[in-house]
Length: 214
Length: 388
Image (cartoon, rainbow over all chains, first blue to last red; front, side):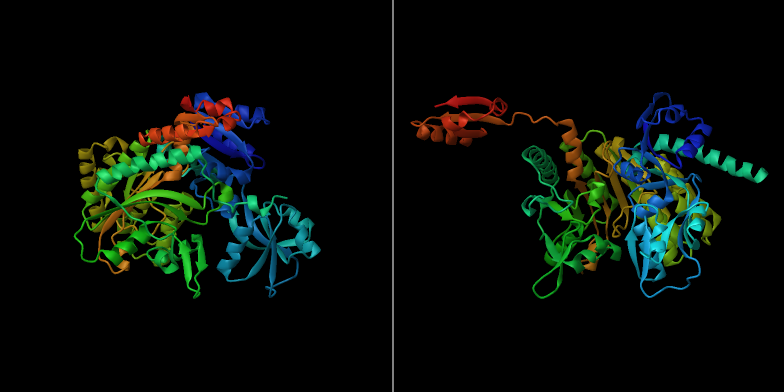
């Protein structure tokens, strides 16, 4: 039996689509949304529906063997999990954004973000000293109110930024959903995990080819 | 608000009698195995100079170490692992002693971990080091000892994965890769970040054969056939030598009769930097991280001016405890006799208690007055209650 932790929210539907394309029955995930544990004995799979930020924790402790989670969260948490596959879902970017018209770094740069570790690491590698302010959402507010100079945040369409007069300045990383594995499960349940990875890989490659043909 | 008195720093825990009893029991059993295999226990200080611990490990490892100052302002640190202090101990005390030297330890180690993620900052380990023997035979002894210890401690279902640092180092050394590229490769292999690994390998200027080999390194995982397969595809001498060693290892492990626990895994990496040959990790269901691990570290003692090959391993006692606690969660009756005395029979009671204790029975003694306060649950712990 493989236990898979899925991220609720934005990427759940896409994840379920992908799994179904691979022939894994996920009907009951769509149907009863309130249930947190969904067992699928015919497939030998159990699904856990978790908050995206908690998925790496379940996997690290081995209560879930596998997980599907955005790269943004992996960058932020640096958990001890194996990253097996880029699922190509939920594409977005982790970017630095700021008010229009301001250029260059002021001497003491303040950054508001939901991803403090990822932001700190990015600026450390650039050799720029920054003060990071952790917020839990609506990060765009910070530069508008003068709490910070810039923000580090996830952007997909850029609409929220535009509406708040912010522009994208630098791209830190491209974000897609990843398949992660617990390091012990990866060895003890290697066979069934590898099988799943192969099916997913084939399906993803097939998709890429379809894109090209279109 | 709670008073400071009740607060503990994060990442450390109390062991109540139930857990402590199981822990002591695990350690006693492992100790018996260690000593019948000829390993002698040593103790090293809980703290030493920070430099000692940084010897043989990466600079980043220093961030995980608890540090403080002595009176002259030198930096001291709580030991983050036991292998490094033992390497130091050997070079301090064993310059002209006949080898091999077999040492073991039961110690706590300290590392800054993200304790809110459920990890502990203080961890208990048992381990053994076999020093001065550079043949793979010594590694076979160490792996078998690890298996026997886990069995004896009560872990029934587990697997030991064996790899070799020489295999992938050979591939990297045969190509002109920069240190930076090597580090990036190592870290993505270590974290099994296959997505990054693929990208790095794609951009490396190495030959196609080695590219394919590195991409497939994690698929080289399984029984002895994996070694035959790896032998076929290895082109450089270092990788070939690693495979020859592992094959010989498999032979000896078969003599020890532990093949059923073994799998080979050429993509295996350990998170300490000092390993130079065979490496291994043990896994058991229900535990999210390895229950034991170790390997050969031929250069570590040399860094302390001793010139000795060495191999060893440690068992994660907290991990074993966690698994066993789940199996034997009920507190079994653990005391033999309760002696209850009244106002006039203290002397008789004490005498009886001493006598039973001398004969090896677990004995409590209590006054009639206190006895009235005991709950039935506590009374049931005793096999026998004697009134005098």
